[in-house]
Every structure is written in structure tokens, then in C-alpha cells.
Image (cartoon, rainbow, N blue to C red; front, side, top):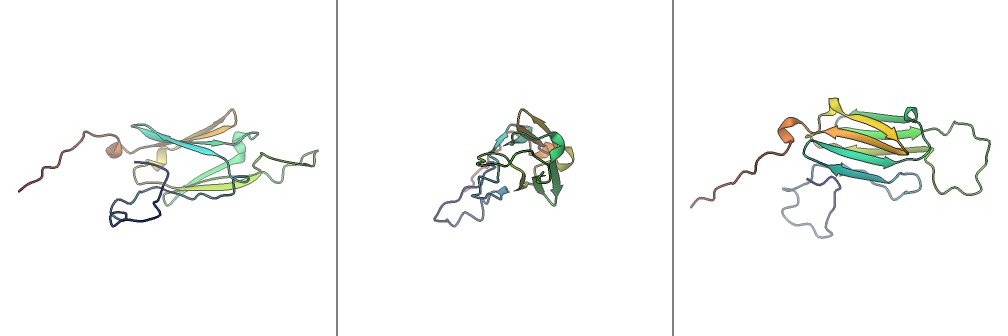
Length: 139
């Protein structure tokens, strides 16, 4: 299962049947939204967001109705500088992810190290890799 939803310009009749369970609310506002990676193994999904210069207490991570919301709002922090030009820094942003039903939402963990916020989303046991099943085609 892919986490990032891609869509063809020309939908097919199978699109609704094979619809992806993930929907990531992406914006084109890269200047206010951090870059992120999503990776997966048999037991979990991992979301990594590149957000330099923060502390772990600056983040707010919520899960409600199968939506993961990650936000930062530190606009009120005082600085002794006025920027003439600023090409990085996230004083305020929100990013949301629609989670698939395979996530064990009560076991989600996160940590912040070296400018990267990592969120671990464990898969429910019944959705972890299972043996391949062959479906017999009958006459």
C-alpha cells in the first residue's frame, strides 16, 4: 500500500474499486510547509518532517477521527532580529494526514532529534504482512 496518493489524469473504471485508503492534504505552499518523508515496513509507517530549530515542546500532534494533525505555532516567540530575507523556518504550519484503518492510533509515538520530527504509526496486527493468498479461478 502506498501512502502518497497519486492520480492519473484519466481515471479508469477501476479507480473507485481500487481506491487508496490514504489521503494526504498537500499544499503547494512549500515556504510554510515542511518537507516530509513517509516510509513503511511490515510493522509500522513512519512519517519524518524536516523542521529545524524547534524544541519538542513546540509541536502539537493530534489524532481525531482517523486524521493525524501536526502543527507548530511559535509566532509569539520574541527575537532580537528582524529578517531581511528568510528562506527557512516554520513559525506556524499545519499538516494533516488521513490515516488508513490499519493504524493502531492508541500506540502512535513521536520524537524530535536533529531537526527532524519522527512520528511512528504502528500497524494493527491483522494488517501486518500476511502470507499471500491464491484465489482459485473455477470453470
